[in-house]
Length: 56
Image (cartoon, rainbow, N blue to C red; front, side):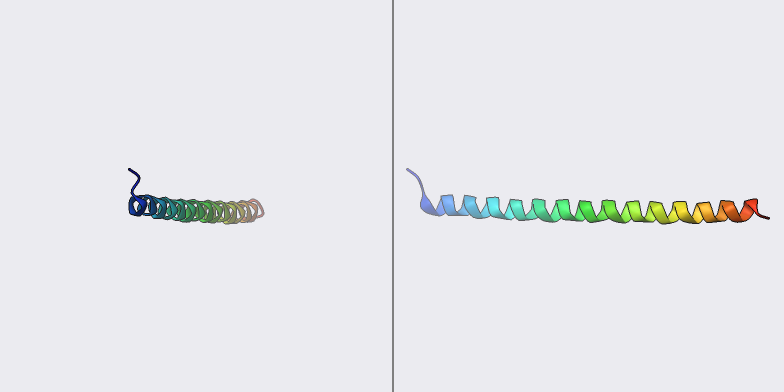
């Protein structure tokens, strides 16, 4: 009693969820990189500021 159209529907749903997962993980990945990059820039700015204050 297997309905072929139902199976095809399920397949497309699976493909869609896979696509969503890939997009989600990619977004998370790029946000992580962006956050790390920002933190690095902030740390560098802080270091420069501290060095500047030390030499005053």
